[in-house]
Length: 364
Image (tube, rainbow, N blue to C red; front, side, top):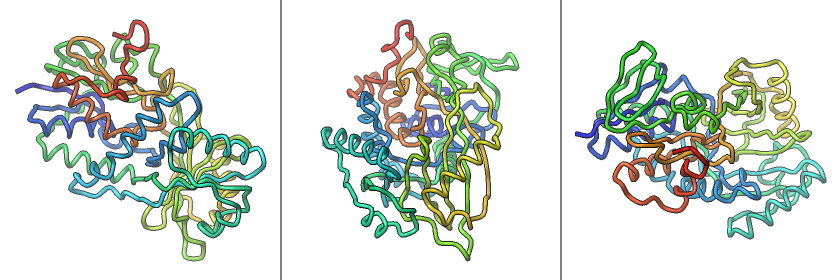
């Protein structure tokens, strides 16, 4: 039986381990703190490739859109439902400059055949009465969201049910034939998959300049009986050029995020980060001032030079699946399926080929 080591117990590692184990391979996940230890635990769980789209990042949009299409089936395959919501995303323009940016985004998406609906200020208030006065809105009905923490627990349970083993050692190097751990031991394997998010760069020389940590602070709020309920849809906006999103959860929870700072592996929550997130959330949804502040937490995204994941072979016996930046939860289904295909020796589809690490000189 082929032995596969997956380094990383976040959403990408767990999804990959589950899907690979389901093909009959023997899989071990290596992570000191699987499920709770990485950036996935902090993630808001937006599955929103369209509202994340930028001109010049068409490959990122194509990759994300393909994964979004797989999400309903991916969620349905999990024994424990991960709280998938289908209400869509509502992007808000708070001033004239935002409205112009929104118009350009809508034109760009329309040129690519993506479904968006432009809304007047009145139509926005009809859909989400709790929002502040806006200039305009953009409704993306196909976007989804998921409770990332429920998802991680469900993926871990599903992987365990498929026979995946867990090793809580800390990987320090990945090579053909094995994963070397901090205690000097080695987990031997036929193939290793590097899926350690922002910590991937230290595991293989080819990743040293290709993966960087990007800090994000996130708040979790809860509606109180005296407050207006959370919005039905995910809300996105810019406040003084700062992006902010508000993602509703079952049970009256609202996730607010996220700051973005390139400060190495710092995961401390700052006063400025909490202040900005609360200020910006209140500008979008004034009623949050009555909510309870449940949690303030920071995590690390895995950035790549062009915001497209690194997905493919680094060399004999070593695959990589990292660099998903803001979209790790979104891109988990297509990434896991791609790793399965690569292990079979199949030719990847175009959206996966675009993410091959070989696009960067010296990466393979």
